[in-house]
View 1 (spheres, helix red, strand yellow):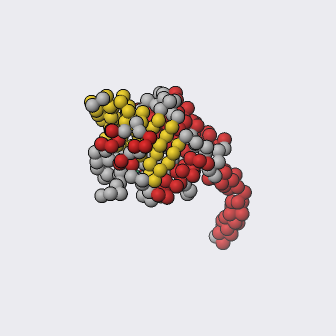
View 2: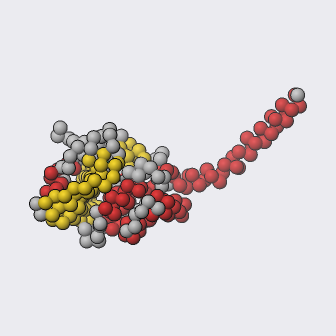
View 3: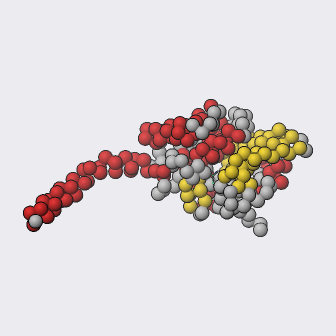
Length: 250
Ligand code: SAH
């Protein structure tokens, strides 16, 4: 009996002794992957994300797929969650906010039918990732973020990744950004109780806006808004859950 316990002890000691060697490989990989710079490992994760989460669910626009392959999502996800950057889900980015699920980012980008000459307004810069995806395709992106430290994070991350065609502003996006209006498209990434009239005003004739509408704690509808002169058409695309559009002046 004692012999058996001793044997177990010996095996246990050997196993524990060997541990550092066994884990050296994966530990190094995790360290490499926790860095925000681009590596082959991140590129592979991203390619897998595009195939499994985006192409398989029906996103077809080549410009959008190319943008999703190019924009370094991990660069916009703060630690300690960076290693999950290419998972099929939203992730917390601090201040009670989230970076949207990759599929939703691709879906919303495809829905506005972006073109290279577009000027796009985003409400809710958050991590800066959706702005980066848009900036891969269109010529100018203006994005507004109500949480100051997030606005600073997005600005710094976008600059560090050389997205020179994105301008980030801290403020309440409900009012849009009239200095740069009209916009060819508007992407709202926080759920509003109703479609903000200033955003409709700042949409160009023939432009498209995509916006989650509904109550913060229930399922919302992702709504497509198409402006045709005085005529504003809306259509529900799918049920979604976004963080709420908050207001500074309420
Ligand atoms: N597009 C972001 C998603 C962020 S979640 C990304 O790619 O990471 C939505 C963001 O909208 C949050 O950061 C939240 O702070 C911001 N937000 C909420 N209400 C807002 C408002 N009225 N104006 C501007 N930003 C707002």
